[in-house]
Length: 185
Image (cartoon, rainbow, N blue to C red):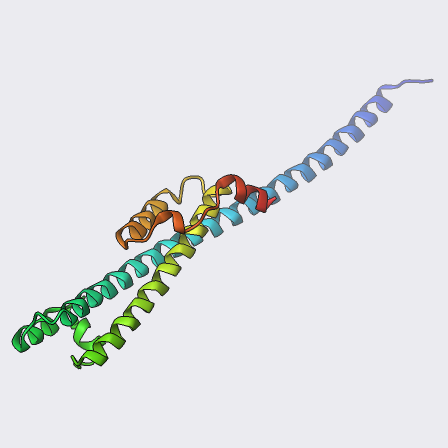
């Protein structure tokens, strides 16, 4: 076998070319992974923002409905005389709107009040169901370890929202991080 400098240089050049092609393929593969992880990160950030907006909307809605419920309770107590009833209707406001007056359409008869009380309870229950759904979604994100701590504030916000509404936190979900991970797998 005859070994020459030209053949050695040619073989080295072929090996270097193969390495460059393989390195280029590896770099391209790594770039795709980074793109995917960035895409997932962007989607998570987007969902964090939308959940934050949803929690704020639910807090506002629940506050308004609880103010109306409290006003209805005072009206139904029967302890108010006509001037006090009108004053209650005028002064029960949320965001500068007379929410109690608007909700009962100005009608203070017992039938209307009992019907509106049942209606407001249904609306509060619907909002609480939405809060529970958001709480479960946040729990799932946290259990999946994709959020990298982005949901800590949201979890405390939903916990405060549920606690302030008088709901039992244990009734929301009995899922643990371990159960969720098993479901994900």
